[in-house]
Amino acid sequence: METQRKNEIIQKALGYDISHVVKRFAKDNNISFDDVIEYEIELKRFLILCVLYPNKQFAMSSEIVDELWHTFIWHTQSYFDFCKSTGGKYIHHEPTPGDHENLECDEITLLYLETFDTLPSLRVWSMLNQDIKEFTCSRSPASCHHKLSSEKYATLQM
Image 1 (cartoon, rainbow, N blue to C red):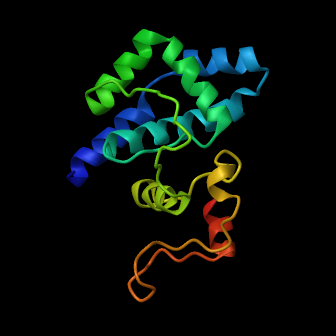
Image 2 (cartoon, one colour; image 1 turned 180 degrees about the vertical axis):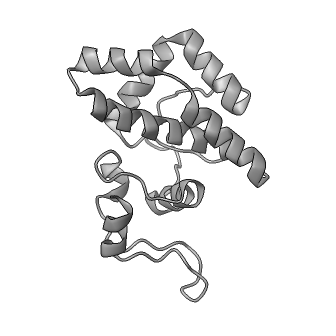
């Protein structure tokens, strides 16, 4: 996908107003509005990855973001409009069977880094980040420019 189209998708998705969903989720779950804003950004980024990489199998690895996604889907018109305006088609939410092949955490982290120029939030995506001491991509060590020490990883999270 060309860079301009990719950037358009990212901007449309991140700029799409779901404040009514965020408010409902915060109220129903007794969570601060500021925290839910962070989850909203991460949900939109997850959905962006689904749009940009339709042949990849992404597993939802954040329970709280998954719950926000459910709330978003319940607002059917908003969710449908979001899907149509960002990727042109409905983004389905289906449970992942236990034997289903999903992307490895490193691959998801790499796609996230390459797409958003930052690493996934440690607080939100703990499953992706729980064992990361040093993140590397699958390229040979000589050609990998993604090596990040845990110190560098921490600075990107701020």
